[in-house]
Amino acid sequence: MTTKDADDTERSHGKRHHVIAAAALEDGERAIIEIEGREIAVFRIGDEFHALLNYCTHQGGPLCEGLVDGTLSMDENWELTYECEGEIVSCPWHGWEFEIKTGRHLSHSRYRIPTYETELDDGEVYVRV
Image (cartoon, rainbow, N blue to C red; front, side, top):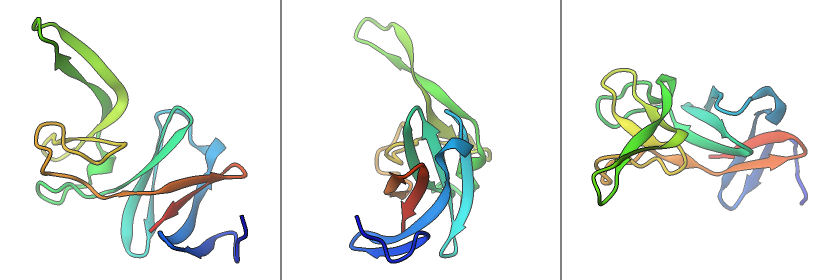
């Protein structure tokens, strides 16, 4: 991989922006940063990093400032199971829930938050916008 600049490299999938050192985010933590006039949150889930626009499609709330938790699902026997621990973010304004990895709303798949490609390079996290 060749780079013109460690912080900002033009690529086919958008410009690459340095965000944070991977070691600075523990599992379950997030960092909210501004890139090109957009507030974007980078979440660490295990060894993966996911970037999501900090904007709720419901009423424009600061989605990524909300609670990060899991969700309940029901199987064919009506048994409830708690799953996706640390993979769901709830908007602090009205509780709308979205999957951090995909940006999809839990109940209505037509609602989606923009996600951004992340890269881990030499211990540093980058986001493409």
